[in-house]
Image (cartoon, rainbow, N blue to C red; front, side, top):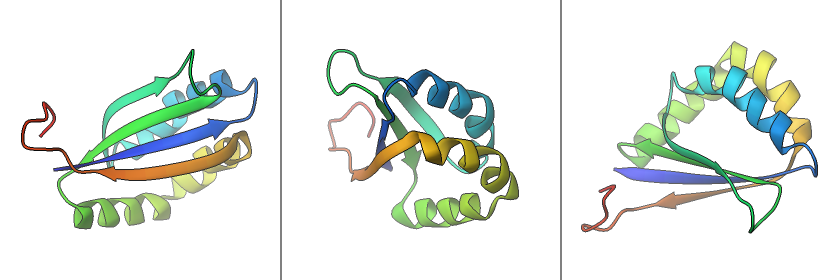
Length: 104
């Protein structure tokens, strides 16, 4: 099992708009391809940031599912045109749980 932590810096004052759009439009689409483990904002801490944690069986499964998501016409037409202008920066980290991790 692997986990992908995705961190998004959102335009100042637009976090609520981004989160609502993700919840209402993005999540129903991406859930066809990936399993959401957690979704957070931070306060205090890195303001205007959103954090997603996704679970995959392997890196190969992640690559296959992300490729299918990127080809999804609904993702391309309904989610991305609204979401992309709100994003300042995006980071992604693959996390490999240790044997004693509760998420292993």
